[in-house]
Image 1 (cartoon, rainbow, N blue to C red):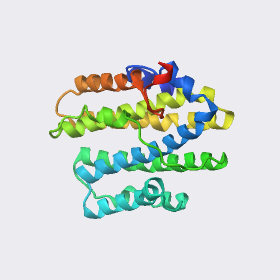
Image 2: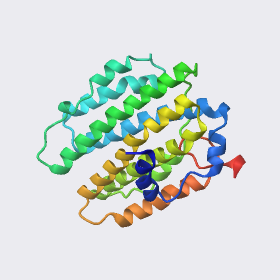
Image 3: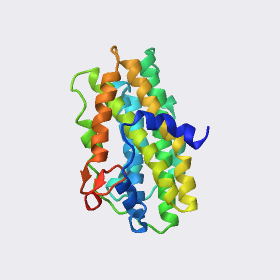
Length: 255
């Protein structure tokens, strides 16, 4: 599947494309360390989101412990300035065999798709870290953007609506990441361009996996919720933002 074919359903799903003002800031060489740092942290947060979904809705005690063990070294390095672990060795430990077997189709689908997502997002985390190391970009902790928290305000507070909305939000976050990778890639040097294009396939699949799970779990048609959350996501992307991050809106000084 070609680059445009991968991107087409993503662009159809999202309610807006990345504003030119964001791209103007993103392609400045002095902003590359910040973008790579935030991208790396976003990969971990994506893995954490998937982990929390499994722990809350499906995992038994043994599975919950395994999930925490998988992510702990990444979290220690990212949030508590722990030592940099052996990411390759850690990646080999992640397997859905550590999760409970279930006769529920949606629970099994949640396990299968979210464990694969965790494995892929943590691999991407390590890849971004390698890119940073190759360019002598040190890891420095930064504040989070308002994007994810802003999107999560759309979530309803009763089940199963809460789970359905969390999955729809996950779909939009993954789709936006895919769209941003594609929008940013042409402005990057050759190696980085290849790297970002290489991420498109998995990010596009992740948004589709989240959406498929939401449809499978909901007893009602989810299209109205998809529309509402999509409008909220676009509003965050198109509104002014005081902090420049990978998922931020229009930079204030460029608006």
